[in-house]
Amino acid sequence: MLDVNIGEVTCTGGAGFIGSHVVDLFVQLGYEPLVVDNLQSGNREVLPPQVRYYHVDITSPQIKAVIEKKRG
Ligand SMILES: NC(=O)c1ccc[n+]([C@@H]2O[C@H](COP(=O)([O-])OP(=O)(O)OC[C@H]3O[C@@H](n4cnc5c(N)ncnc54)[C@H](O)[C@@H]3O)[C@@H](O)[C@H]2O)c1
Image (cartoon, rainbow, N blue to C red):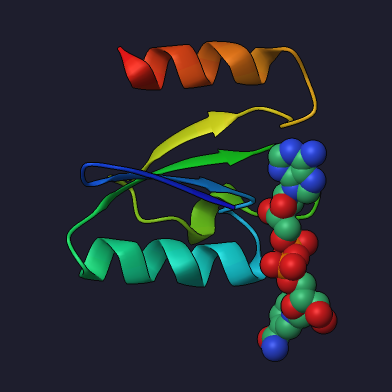
């Protein structure tokens, strides 16, 4: 679920029940969560407004673009 990279953490399913609590914890610890979620069952509104969010299905080819953007 997590890919740690110098303060930035990718949280797939981060708009879901468990994921949103994990995102909150990372924010509290000073990390910068990046959420990838297709909102199949999650809710964008549970995320703190400053958290970067990509509406992407992790099984789709679009996930490659998210990873490449993250790597800069
Ligand atoms: N105690 C409570 O109040 C409460 C509330 C809700 C759920 N629960 C429990 O929590 C568990 C479920 O929590 P969870 O966090 O595992 O599930 P979840 O459905 O809340 O979270 C999964 C997240 O992954 C996303 N997702 C699914 N497939 C995806 C894909 N292919 N690409 C991108 N995103 C995708 C969904 O949109 C969702 O946001 C269950 O056991 C449920 O009973 C408890």
